[in-house]
Image (cartoon, rainbow, N blue to C red; front, side, top):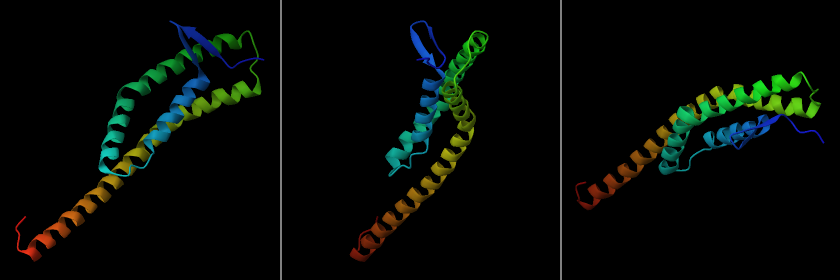
Length: 136
């Protein structure tokens, strides 16, 4: 059985497929809807670290795999499955910018929602305090 293009560099096994899986994991986590402000803050921090570091590492790995794929293309014919797997990875790479944009829009929306919830909670608390004669 023929495997898709892989290479080993400094003891690290890389393939276009495994890089694509990492992109998919990032996308899934970046677009996870937070249920509270703690999850929202954690999600913002995660995406910030991905955008500032991990995404560049993945791009470098993808470039390296691409180099080996081009080299091996002179010596072998890729199967339809290998082509599909590699195409999927490059499609994930191309979608990441839109995924980060969608993440930012979702974060903005959830931030506003959570702020409104806090206003309602504090507003209710203020109403209860006034009714009971307390000052907040």
